[in-house]
Length: 217
Image (cartoon, rainbow, N blue to C red):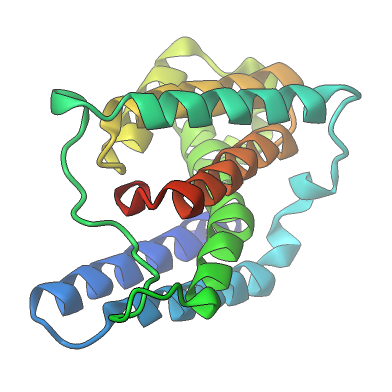
């Protein structure tokens, strides 16, 4: 595996490994598994830093107006996300991430890590994997040589379906994947889906804190 591919796969694989560890710890009753999340975020951020030289496309400035459109798309995905959770659209993800103590107080250290991870680290890590790597690789194995503007419908649909399968709200996930892929293809710039993804996750986090709908986290 060449370094460019490894740089996009390794942080995502590390994130998924920590997710599996947290699920396993919770299932076995091995203490407070919520603290695995801060460790996960720091580990993934470190991996992104180590491979930072491979992300040359992040040096490209987004076109004028792209960030505004990306923010609007991020808000739209958030609205879809919180309304597409009924019945068969929700595979069930447990109780979500509940940052409250046994006494009912919010642990703001956990909240800070969760918000920072969801709105800063996760969008960067996931867009590098799902859009920068996998979406282009499905179109052409020499993915770095393929501009996002040349992406085909088959690759977009398949990668979005896989992206949706990563989430308990699978249908909302597919729509999010389609939206982020559309931004990437339209603006030929990875910052467009990163900003949209970050906007979705940040607003979702704030909404969860205000409503207490922890299952969405």
